[in-house]
Length: 359
Image 1 (cartoon, one colour):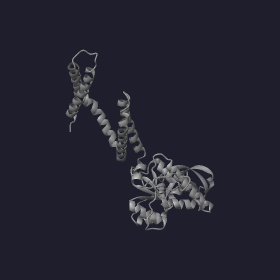
Image 2: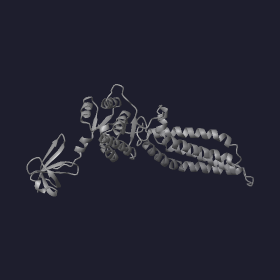
Image 3: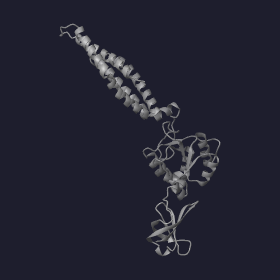
Image 4: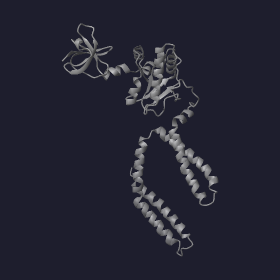
C-alpha cells in the first residue's frame, strides 16, 4: 500500500492549520495596522504548501526507522513500555489540572513538561523492571528465602522474555564447574534453570561433615555465583517441585517432561534413565569428547612423556585437552618433550585414546 498521497494530505492539513494559528496570533498583535486576513491567509497557504511538499520526506524516513526498530524490540518490552506510557500520561493528566492554574507562563508550560517527563519515566521504569512487574501480576512477587550467602534472590520461574528452551542443571554439572565456561561462550541458547530441590541438595553437600563433600558443595555454590554475574547468561531459580517423585533425579526428569525442558548433566545413570523416558539430555562429558582435537594416523605432535605405560617400554603423555597418548618405546623419554607420530586412534567409553611412536 502506498502512503505517499495520504502523507501529503495529512501534511497539508496539519501544517496549514499550524500556519493558520500563527497568522491568528500575529493578527492579534496591537502594533500591526493591517487586516487579519492579510496575515492569516499567507501563513495558512505557506504552511499548507510546506506540508504538501515536505511531509512525505519528513515522515517517511522516521517511520521506516521506527518500523525497523520495532521489529527488533521484544513484544514484552513493547507491552511494558505501552503500559508505562499510559500510566505516566494518566499521572500527568491528574497533575495538570491543579498545575494549569499557575500564573502565566507556568500554567501553559509545566503541564506539557509533566506529560513528557511522566510518559518517559513510566515507559523506562516498566521496561527496566518488567520481570518484577509480570511476576507481581502472576502472583510471583511473594518473598523468597535465600538459600546460600553467595546466591542473590532470583525469579521463581523462567523469564518470559528469555529465548530458547529451559535448560535444567543437575547437581553434578554444577559442581563440575565447566558449565560456567560453556555458558560464557554463548553456545547455550536457552535459560539455565536451577530447581529449588537441586539447590537444597547442593546446600546439604556444602554443609557436610566430610571435608571433600563440603568443598564440592561450596564449589557448586561458587559456580552458580559466577553464572549469575556473567553478562548475557540467563539463569533463574525455580520453585517447581514435582509431587510425583521423591529422588532428585526423578524430580528433574518429571520437571523436564512437564515443561519440555532439557537436562544438562554429567551423571551417566541419569543420562540413560532420562533418555529412556524421552527427555533430551545435554552431557558435558560427551561435549568435551566431541570438541577434542582430531589426529589422524601419520600426523606428528609434540608431547611431554610424564610416566610409564602398562606395557613394557611404553610411555604416557597427555594433550592439552586431557587426551591420553600411549607412546610405544617411549619410556626412555620420561620427563622429556619429544615429537611423536600417531599410529592409531581409539574411541572408548572413557574418551579418546591415541597410540604413537617417537619420531
